View: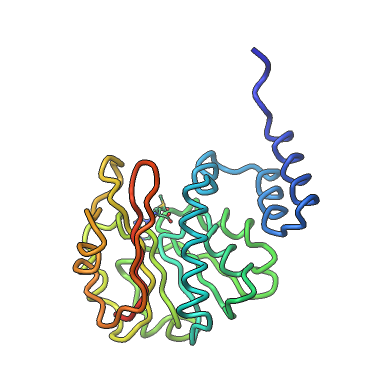
Amino acid sequence: MTDEISREALHDILRGVAALTGDALVADLARLIGKGVRADISIAFNPKQIASKRWLVEMLAEVLPKPDGPVWVLGAWHGVLGAMLLADERLAITQLVSLDIDPDCAPIAEILNHRHVASGRFRAVTADMMGLDFERAEGGRPGLVINTSCEHLDDVPGWVAGLPAGLPLLLQSNDYVREPDHRSCVPSLDAFKAQAGLSELWFAGALPTKNYTRFMLIGRR
Ligand SMILES: C[S@@+](CC[C@H](N)C(=O)[O-])C[C@H]1O[C@@H](n2cnc3c(N)ncnc32)[C@H](O)[C@@H]1O
């Protein structure tokens, strides 16, 4: 058997793909791989994860392209969604906060989004989303709060209840109950609507994949 591909080789390939496509996000990923990153970046960039984030960006561009204030991404992992949101010219996002409880995530998110850190559009925060006070948030009240990690929370209704009334929200969850870290999966889109209890609903949809279905809601707390 021949040797497995090395990090250096993967770095070179991604730099080549960036040169071929002119895609700045691929160049940012190549840079991140070159610096060394933990292995689950491959999950964050797998086709299912990217498809669900592209779906999110497409629907946001239709439903709420100009959020009135900073955008917070909660349970943001390595900051891939933030990078995709800031790359999309249809969206007017002046400030994006990428928050995760795992302290390993912020440094990775900042490297991936280094251009936006430099321009002041991106910052990464380590915190528990359950304890946030958006009325006193640095940078002012958010124009949109995104949580694509609802399935990872113990108490989704309790988290939503603690948010300011009227706050624009984009939520994703799924029915992937076999994953041990998933604590609040929902069996259907209607179950997700009931779990979230939004006062206004602007979009609700389901995206089937091979092993599970992902659900998304956009509306107001
Ligand atoms: C596997 S990742 C992302 C999964 C999500 N479905 C997605 O595609 O974006 C889930 C992330 O949520 C984070 N997380 C879980 N509970 C959290 C909490 N209470 N506050 C902030 N981040 C949290 C984890 O650390 C992890 O990085």
